[in-house]
Image 1: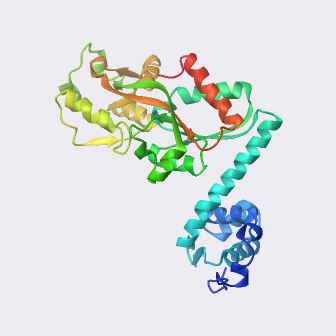
Image 2 (image 1 turned 120 degrees about the horizontal axis):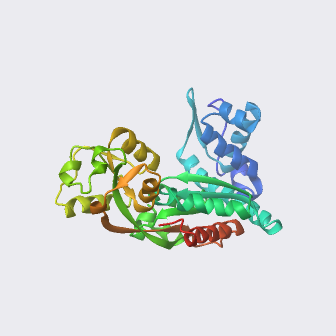
Image 3 (image 1 turned 30 degrees about the vertical axis):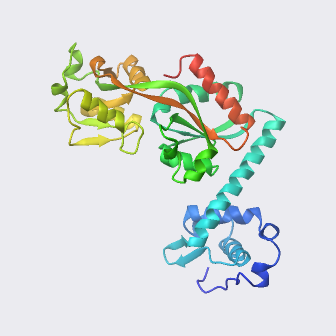
Length: 333
């Protein structure tokens, strides 16, 4: 698209006549979002199986209809303008609501189909979430499930915008951390499921694993893996070292990736702080040894977060039921 195309004035007939709801088409929202995600008209045309002129015309028509430029065109691709960012926020919400409508209609017809997007944190990834998905698929095999991994600071805003359906993991201690926009906090509902402790683990094949007691001084030479500073468990790490009369290690790896941490422990002889449910599972598999004396006293609450301002879809209700079934079967903490 050339950079000199005309954009309708907001007060012209095109921009000031009939309401936007009568001028805009849903396909324009989808094309607009795809251009943002793909980074260029060419890439978007490939993903949408449309011609470049068709994509360009859709964006040009959209800009004319809203009366402002949504993209800056350059040699390296498309860059969203400030107005485009505002439009993007609303466009994603509209498309997510359309997805909810589709899922609710499908659920009314079959009760067992649709698409569920689950956001998860470290504490729920090892046992609870896999078991819940397995239970869901056992009685609703036609439900497609997408899992997104992140922190509360990234997943809760996605939940508010409708980009995920439920967030499973450590509940925030203060509601204010749920969203950077405090007026959005009331949109979230936190439901606790169980309390989670933490263990310090080393490789089951590490020479120290054969000892009955391991002193903190013996762990000093090993590299430590602790939760990231923005995670809900960083305070637990600080309290652990303080209660054992130690300062926080100077050189640490901050990570909440269970698989990365497990590999570092097994292959590189490091010592890690790990949610108790995950640590005990890996210990039963003979991969790590949980250090009994190093039990972390601080307890975090694991549960799920959903939107408080809308009714749960049938698919989400089924998944929440699968979560509770997993807990009854011992698949949680």
